[in-house]
Image (cartoon, rainbow, N blue to C red; front, side, top):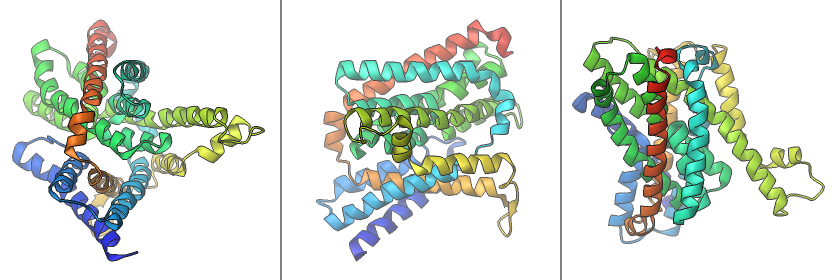
Length: 355
């Protein structure tokens, strides 16, 4: 590995580390997380890319390595932060709404995306990012559908813009509408994209209402994040079917064999890590750190995501985002608005069920 490629990888790691730390700085200075670490890293590297006159091909190779490898490792470690036992807690009541929003989000994104000329891959990423967990869903689905890096960046930009709007406004909207704590949990947990944004909105709501350690919105979000496993499996099967139809698999291959060939191994390890966490394998405190293993692995996953998106950002020129990215951003807004409206309608229509 030459010096320019190694330097690019190290630079992505440094940007990812600083971007991850920035979430703590935001919490300290602003008392909330305004922008998740991965989005900070993406924006920083995009700015650097546009300020530099050109990038050497070996440097680009290093950023490509970072965007792919760190992405996979981050997804795997994310599984260690999930416990399927938590599904039986507060968040399970939101499952019908979560499932409906998943179907709604992908339907709107694909239909409207096709209508306005957005690529199918970008539409899938916008749909997944809106209905599951923002950047994590985009990262996962991008590897399954083999999305281009610019498609990832466009989807991330679309998700970030409206995610930020929701995170800022929902605590105050909830107060204005007189929602109960559980109703707010349903709204924030199902209609704010990124987990860090849900945490930020919940922190604002808790501070406004003096609720102490209440975490209803994050419990709902946990159930929603778990659905990433099933969404990833569905899209893996869809891509396997299309591969077989396009002749990319042998004609005598069964669907099962094609799925075996195309199934991303990082998804399997993601499931394994979630299973291990469910059985308490990561329930110990890390010696010398004073932090639970799940917390440490979660922080490491966020760092890897941020480092991966730093690599993505070095591929994107602002002129391309503004000339080609307006439609994906519009698609993100339409999809987000439909999911938000659905969640808001649910909390009013089924207020007795929610409590």
